[in-house]
Length: 292
Image (cartoon, helix red, strand yellow):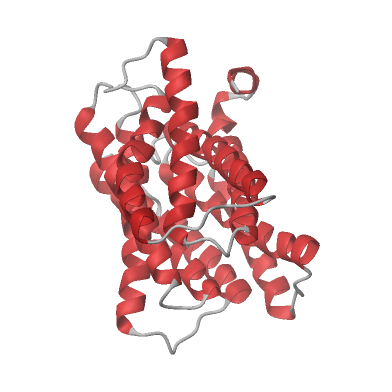
């Protein structure tokens, strides 16, 4: 991964790594879909086991300090990441998958909102319009069920907001800690919590389940690394919109691997997201004081 990092121009690093993160997260989501018969907390547990194992081995090999340096924000990253994922899976039990996923796409917006406060990043008015356009595209693709309860809606929005906080914690640790040290704080805190949940409900994976668990863990690990590099390489307002490529990939994966049809609204949503990202690319050439 360091070889790839050195070959990418500094001005494009944030966007490139966010796109890589989206691709690997897409692979993780496809693996999770194949493991839908296992409890949500168990999937988080296995993902955390793999993430901790890989991160710990890398930390030891590089001779890094496991506690890290910016302990306060590392803890915020770990706690917020765990809470956000827990709330997201909780929202999945309270509303349809498409609706829960749509609400989760508010997280890039929360990331930028928090970045203006915690990381003093500036945002142009046109960039807020970009987020609105991209989210409109997501609504076209995934839809939104207006029959969901207030409790379910609040849970979903809370998940997106806390995820935005976790991403800002990553930015806060930019100059103090190695990306892998930042990453390990998620499994360190999620493992005991999800491990306790597994004591109440656990289903032993069988056969090909182990293959998909491995793919889920590996793709999630690479995706988290790429996300960390992206958020530390450029302003949140510039890289966060590229998260919406995930909605387009979800439609494509559903069509290719799960025989899901693509309706007219989905096509419209994909076009809107592409237009939003073209807009984002043009904003990338804006004056350098933006996002600083």
